[in-house]
Length: 255
Image (cartoon, rainbow, N blue to C red; front, side, top):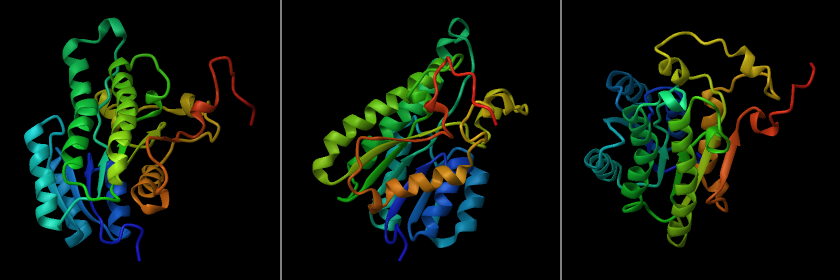
């Protein structure tokens, strides 16, 4: 029997990257999954690949109405809701003084408000024993220059996770946050207009000296969605190759 046998999950931002990796693992472990995204063609292709255990639905995570519709359809099509993975996110690079209000609000609307709306909609119908996994970032644990809006949103997710864990715990619903470091997805590339990025200067500072893989984050998300993490709630789970293990004065170990 799979780790998520009989469970129903919604995963946002699931058409590609970390979300798609999680969707594949969830279906492989017996879950039925609603793949939610705004990238319709890619999302539909993934749902077709995964078969009857998956369906794709368009979801702008900043829309109350679309959240209500997707959660309602998960219940109607699959009979309930047990897991929510708030994975959808956007990144914007700009110095503080160059960050426009529109850019700030766009990032907050997807990352922070999207997570709030998702938790609220899911919590109204989620069954006892359920799990909400909010994807934050290492930028939800410490700051980094030029990503003010992103950092603000990811810190907010970390805090909202704790409040939701306290409120939903008596109902048997757990809520945790995941904090990936640099992962091999298209997020950074998309944020800078599609250009290729040399990440060597960054990876040279990491304990593991490499970029993480979406599949590695999917394993952590799977653990938190399953009963194997049954006594974990309101907590941060970091998968960052060791980026938070150091401080500004460290010049890097040899090797």
